[in-house]
Image (cartoon, rainbow, N blue to C red; front, side):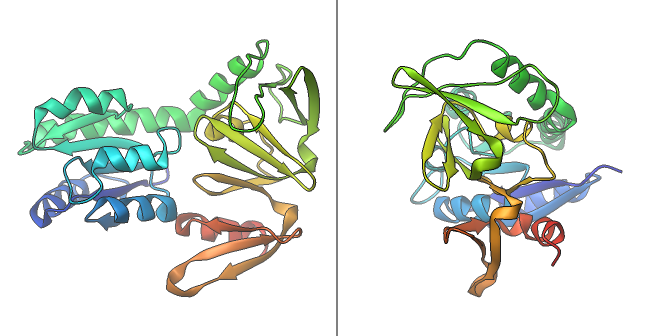
Length: 270
């Protein structure tokens, strides 16, 4: 049996949230993990709950749905189905890589079409599409990139096994970073940052693609934007309001998504 599809509903209209809830409750293997009524709430819930799919209203007070995507970053966003009262937003929706969009008022058939398309795409990724894309990227010669600080690229052998080292090109030289030396990895737009005890390396790669090549016995994604090497964890911190963090042996504290706490506790033996 497959894991349920974890869905977040973001809409400032109560009737719209209710309609989406009723439609999703008719779908098998779906878990509605939360709701948000504005853009700020959407950002917080996406970061904390780490849903697979977000029904995201475009027009909301304060931050719009598009603002939410810009702030989190397209590469760090879950899959999106935009919900809008205006068809003019459809083109923009696809520009930011939304799976589909629903124009209010939408009928059951249109909802089903968009939802099933989202389910198929997510299921395909879960069975290895991302891993194959990463192998293709890492198997070619590194392309030069740039970011604030140091321009870098990543390359690795074509082996189907887990990464043991990452070659980072910066300022005319190539550094080899052993995977075992990495404390944690964080996302920064189109880049990831490799954090070791002494240095930080910038790599032009998407976090979710890199995750598929790391050994899951050693690394765990604890947040949408963070992967941690498990043996670097010194403590799991419980804060008020249901928030969690991990403290690494070097003293760094990293936020843990609520949706990933249970897996983290299991992996570190709590």
